[in-house]
Image 1 (cartoon, helix red, strand yellow):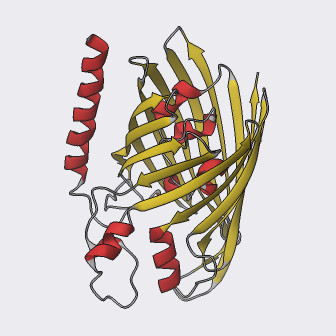
Image 2: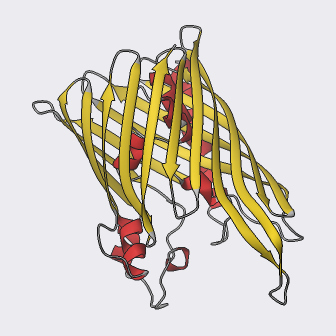
Length: 329
C-alpha cells in the first residue's frame, strides 16, 4: 500500500507543479532542452515519453524510464542540427539494489563561431556560443507496474561575453504492463529557474508537461506511440504564426500531439516513422512544406550493442540527422 500511495503522491505533485507553471510567459530560453537525445524518439516525432525501450538516453526525456535500462549501460548521441550547429549527448545508467536505478547525462548544443560586431557594424573579431546541461537522477520501481523518477539539471549557456546559469528538475511517472505491451507516462520537465541571468531581466526555463502512451498490437509486429506536449499552453501566442491571425481551436489542439509507429519485423530490429503536428504547422508557416513534421529512422538492438539513426526537419534551412550508440558494460 505504501508504494501505491507514493504513486498517487507523485501524480498529485506533478499536477500541482503544472498548475504553477501554467503562468509561464510565452518566451523561454534554454530551448536546446527540447531537442531529442534519442534517435529512436526523434524518428517517432521527437518526443515520446512512454517508450518501454532499453535506451539510456531516454532518461533525458523521462527519468522514470531509467527503470527499463539494463544495468551499467552507456549511450552516446550526435545530432546534426541547423547549419553550423551541432548537438551531442551522453548518458549512463546503473542499477542500484533490487528496485532502483541511477543515471547521469549531459547535453550540448554548439552554435559554432560567429563574427563579433560593434553597434556600428565594425567587425572586432569572433566569438563562440553554446548551451549545455548536466543531469543526474534516480528511478525507483514503486510496484511491479509503476515506476517513478527524478533528475536534477545544471544548465549553462555562454554567448560570447555573456553567461547564464539555471537549475531545473524533471519528474516522471511510468506504468508498464509487459504482458499487454502497454506503457503510459506523465512527465513534468524543466521545473526550475535561472540562478544567473544574461542581463538584468530573468527569463524562463522551458517547462513542459507531457503525457504519452505506447502500445504494441497483440497479433502484429507494430507498435504505436502517442505523446501530448506543452499541456499548460493553450493560447495561440505560444505558436509561430507570421500572419498573426488567431489560431483555430482544432489547430491549437493538434499542436500538442506527436504520433509515431514502429515496425518490429524481428526482436533485434525496428523501423520507425513519426509526425509532429506543431513542427509541421510552423515549418509550413515559415515556407517549408517538403516533409514538414515527418521523421524516420531505424535501429538494431543486439544483446549488448544498440545502434540507431534518424532523420527529421527542424528548420527550413536543412534537415537534421541523429545517431545513437549504446553499449552494455
